[in-house]
Image (cartoon, rainbow, N blue to C red; front, side, top):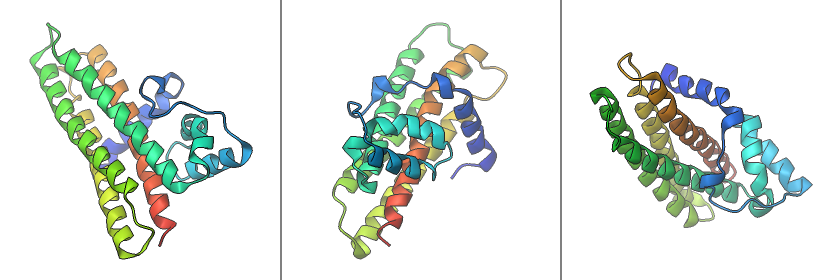
Length: 204
């Protein structure tokens, strides 16, 4: 994992954009009205994350679809993280084609596109393996260990992208625009890891 200080800088940014976070454009499923029991499951699950309130706002919309299932919750989180990462990557590729970028800014975008590209692959592999999970035993533990490793790596990729945006030579407006994208990615990836860990723990 990346350095602790750098990781928590992402969390601080997440707090700052709570009211501005909008995931509708990259949702993995159509939000569905939720019932009391299913909503309580989401709230309880979100308490294991770094941002429980924001987590609940995001995932309570899928409560009925998730149906109190730790596996479906983890799958939903991974799908949202995957789609959000893919959307962020496409937006950065578009931004990189603009004229007038400083050399340092262009280099930072190249790093982010590469890192988030790796993250896309890791999240995709995680979703695929989770859909083929076993009921338990050593095979299940190996599968979950792989998924935990991949999602952790995806979170590190997000952090590496953020590190590349530091420095006085990068325009503040440019940095803010890119960071907003990456913070959404890091937020969902962090929650995905928490839910994957929670699911793995239910089958020990």
